[in-house]
Image (cartoon, rainbow, N blue to C red; front, top):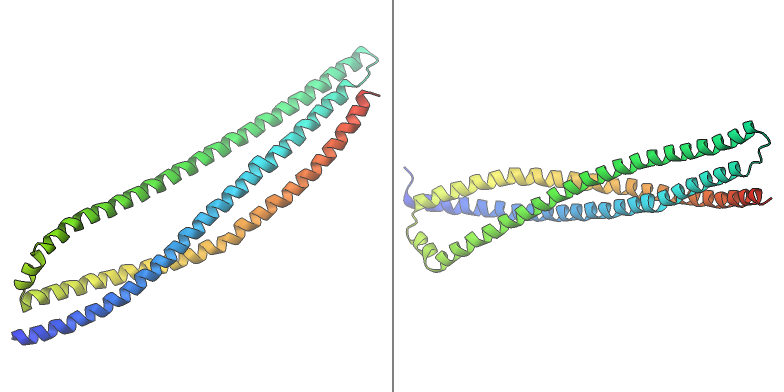
Length: 248
């Protein structure tokens, strides 16, 4: 049968072991938090880069490219209008060619509208996801606030003597039960903390590797901008030739 003094000595040993595990866990949890904050920073950077790429591609490149095509259709219509038909057949051909060009332009616009609708709906889905993330943050904040409210009341009770009364009523046996309970809790925390640390490190590596892909996409958008701008110069040249045709 274990004596009271033996139990006290056992408790001291258990408390020291638990203290070491607590210290090690504090370091691991702190490291995991740092990794998660780096992960969040990288994710936010990606979101900013992706927004930049979207703006450059949609508001910039697309606007210029669409304007180029519209101007080319306008030039075609003017070219057809500048024809000088010599017969009813040729007159009909002129009218038909103008209609044909305007139909093709309408088909192109309808197709573009379909793409804009699809893009808008995709962005709406992204907004829903962002709204869900914001709600998750709000819920997490509320949990922390509720924890603080509870602890404020408990701390007041401790100051008023609850902690002192608990110490005075403690025994070697009750301490032993609490030491064992703390050890069980720490073991569970070690398992959860290790998993979180591994997942955070893995996610950080993956997200950082995606940065290059996003930056490459931005470079590709910039190269396409140069190509579209080059097309713009040729469209302008095409317009000058068309104007000369109209006023020849």
